[in-house]
Image 1 (cartoon, rainbow, N blue to C red):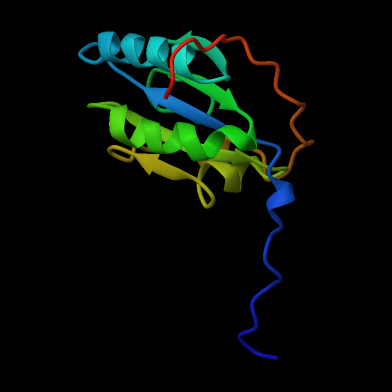
Image 2 (cartoon, rainbow, N blue to C red):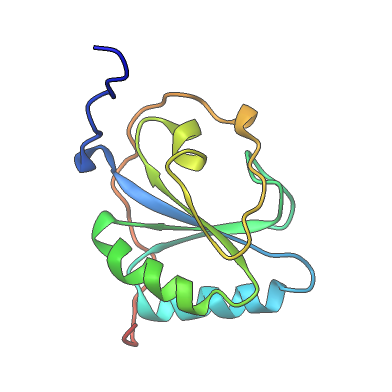
Length: 138
């Protein structure tokens, strides 16, 4: 039948999420503070600082990896607390290109993503190993 859409994706396709927090020289201190606040409040994996563009990311950033169960509290919290920072939130399915573009959401000002640096398909992401120990409520 013409115009029929494909079957919807299942939520179980999402293994986890990433939030990429972008910063520059003027916002580096805010990025540090946000990272500290995240670690105090959420069970996540805080990734390394990348002070230069890496992979598909056109600006300096760090990654926050988190489980599906953390999304409903972390993402609204980031909406309220990102300040001047841009944050890309995307699911981790087996489709990295779509994850960073088609399935992604932006908090703050959207930035560019170099899609040519991403694979269309990949293996499923391994389970997360959080490296934070929250001590404060969100």
